[in-house]
Amino acid sequence: MITKIYISHCEQDELLARELARTLWAVEIESYSSLYRKARILSLAERIRFGVRQSDCVIPLITQDGVRSPEVNQEIGLAAGLDQLIIPLVESGIELPVLIRHLQPVIFYPDTYEDALGKLIQGIRQLTKLDWLKIKCPYCGEEMTQYISPEEEVDKALLAGKHLETICSYCQRNIYLDPRTFRPVP
Image 1: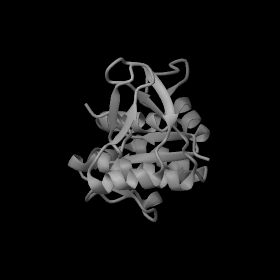
Image 2: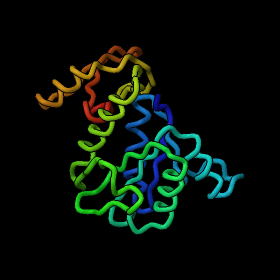
Image 3: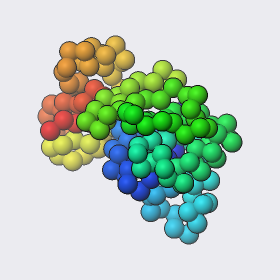
C-alpha cells in the first residue's frame, strides 16, 4: 500500500513539487522532500536518506533543471539502490537519467501539469487502495475528510470536461473539485 511518497526535485522546481504535494495530500498520501525546511536538527543528507527510506514510492520531477541536478540524480540513485518503486514525472522532451531510463514516465508539458498529476494519481490508485479525500472548503476554510469518488465517476468527469461535486460538511455549500487533482475549483 502506498501511503508515503518522496518527491525528488531541484530548487527551481519547488512550485511543481508543492503542487504535487498538495495533490497527494488531497488523496491522503503523505509526502517527503529534502527541500522542505523541516527537521533542521538533521543534516540535509540525513533528511534525504530518511525520506527515501520511509517512503513507499519515489517520484522524481525531471525537468530541464532537474535532470542536471546532482541532488535529484543522487536521490534517484539512492531510491534505485534501495529498490524503491520509482514513478518519474517528466517534462516533455527531457531524457530520463540512466538509472531510470527503463521506466515508464508520466510526461507533462508546462501547461498540462495538472493533467499529468491526474494520470499519476490514477496510476497510484491502480496500485493501491485510496479511500479518503481531504478537502479544504474554499468558503469557510474548514478541512473535511470524505470518501474518494469511485474511479468510474472520476473518469466520466474527465471525459465530459466536468468537475466532481460535493458538499461542505460545515457550511453546507456546494464545492466543485478538479477531477485530476481533487482540489476545489474557485
